[in-house]
Length: 112
Image 1 (tube, rainbow, N blue to C red):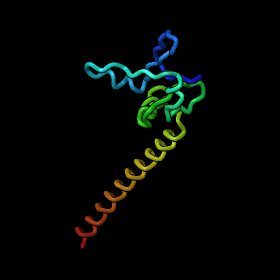
Image 2 (image 1 turned 90 degrees about the vertical axis):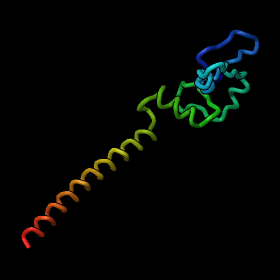
Image 3 (image 1 turned 180 degrees about the vertical axis):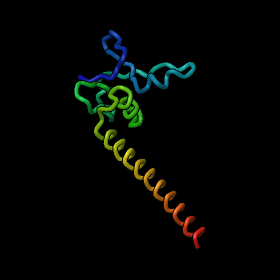
Image 4 (image 1 turned 45 degrees about the vertical axis):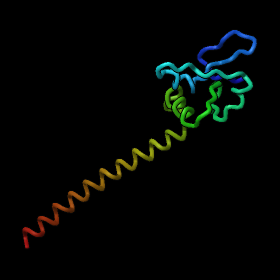
């Protein structure tokens, strides 16, 4: 049985506060939304990590959960980070190359 709760109420229905919705409840005068176990099973976005029972109604909520609860464990995130780092290095090298080229062109103009 998967749940995604930080708090579990002991009632016959066992309604569970959605951690995805609890974040919206931090605003003034809002109460957390609760789901029954059947509703929790229907939430479309489930955390893909083993032994993590969290489910969310929004893809963005799942993304926030993964980045906070499982930092550095997502292969997709690690791949994107590696690509970003490589591109930043390429940009830096390109910028330095263009500066060297510009200096050489200025030297040619001075000599001619």
